Length: 121
Image (cartoon, rainbow, N blue to C red; front, side, top):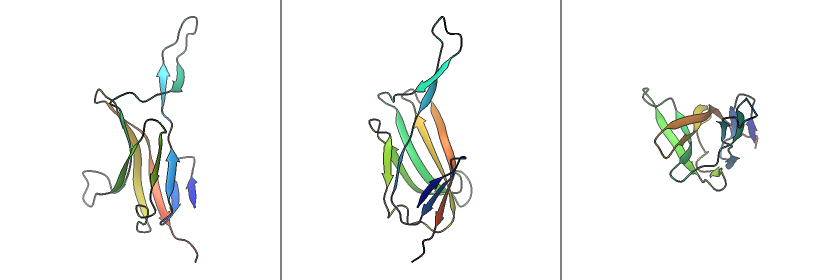
């Protein structure tokens, strides 16, 4: 079972394969006669790196542990975490999706909790 709520929190059954597609948007300056910027899809550029990461705790805190990290391909913006990777302890984890632009700037554009739940068998 996979559920993503309105706050970007993910609930996943332990050991299920997780496949997600991400979207990147950016603000574009108006072209006259328009006066307001528009929000359009961002197409990753050469040198940009997009990644999804799951951790126990936050980096720099005691007990922090990176559980897994996936680089998201530019061409599909889709990644898969295997059932082995998601066979985590039953608990809440932190996750984020960030892009490191070719110029070194970093933007964490999605973050939330990943809750691993059990299944009835």
